[in-house]
Length: 166
Image 1 (cartoon, rainbow, N blue to C red):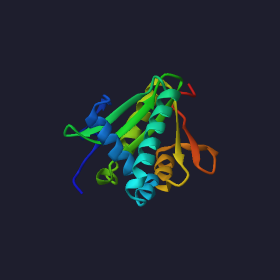
Image 2: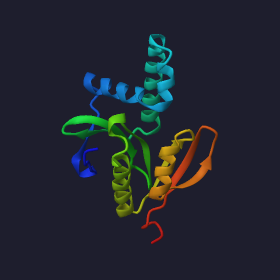
Image 3: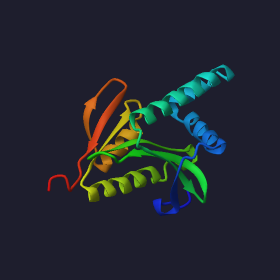
Image 4: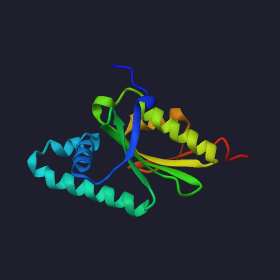
């Protein structure tokens, strides 16, 4: 594995271009929960497109002031991070990396960078993780999130800012 750190990556807003949309679809299809649909073959394509559209519409409806950014390495997209920093509890909406870039600790480093910004602003951070995504849950807990609600399909988490007690 080559040495890669969060200092090697940049973020840029998603721009709705064909290239960005194609990357977002590829990233979505790389997610474990979508992989099983792809086993069905071509007939799964409309369902995958519908699920991706529904997810993106929901994110933007629930977080109209959210920031939806691509994670770039050498100007090439390798992932996506979506956040909302418009209230006193910031929200980490989504973070995903392409499979080739998982395991480099980039996701954790990006989350930790976001948490440092939240700490500086005196804000807590909320997130949720699919109950089936054990790796992500372990990451969140290792970083300092605490589980506040367990549901069959997802867990709600909170990171309490070091500044919020002041």
